[in-house]
Image 1 (tube, one colour):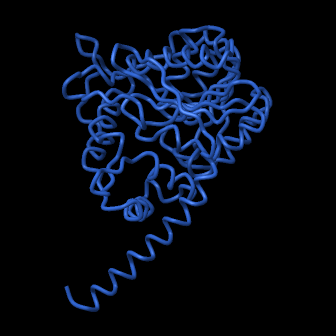
Image 2 (cartoon, one colour):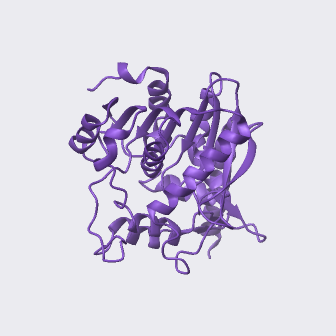
Length: 328
């Protein structure tokens, strides 16, 4: 490498480190004093990790999208804890929860399995925190679908649900054994090719910021994804805690929870926040909401990952009664 190229790399690395340090310093206060807990999953040997921001108000449970982790809720959770007791769960294979190799257990990441995980984890959190029920469940994407499923299975467990562009889809075709059949999920294929190892946190932050998927994240949300959603190895390199194979397996099993036939049994108040610049169908959301006793749909002018892009949209939706939500 020439001397000028070496100098350019040194300058680039120094700038990446400066940007990373500034973002990480801004993110750390959002998880200051956060307690960690663990809850049993669907089967022996699987545990779900959870983060507890504390607070003395009604209980709020947060559940992230596929590929992310509980810590990415911090910009929202830190604000909500002024009025609520706020807990966020890591789904299996994400964050600090148990990871099961999908190649060794094909049904480990079936959405019915993930839903059973959530059922047991929420029951454990209620027992450990002393609450009788969840005042508000906030789920994003996959997390929204899993919380809705849990609310159906456990009537009375949730008072309200805020579902942020949830993966509530018409069911995909089923194979004779009940598993979803796929001709090749493009999201899964792209995920399996995604870069998952980085020489440093600064390099990981710079790489993610350069990718369209993360480009609009707040600096704090992206820093938390890197700092707490990745694992530092003994040699100082970082790798994603949620393995590419795990995230892809979940995408492959998407569409396996068909809530439409039972949605009229969902007694909680529900607000579905539809991302107008995302890829999901508002008419399908409206069809679901039309069958649920107390559900509404509202659109936000944002992309699918708006909880990390624009956390204020979630905070504002939490603060207003579900029935008062705009349907614009």
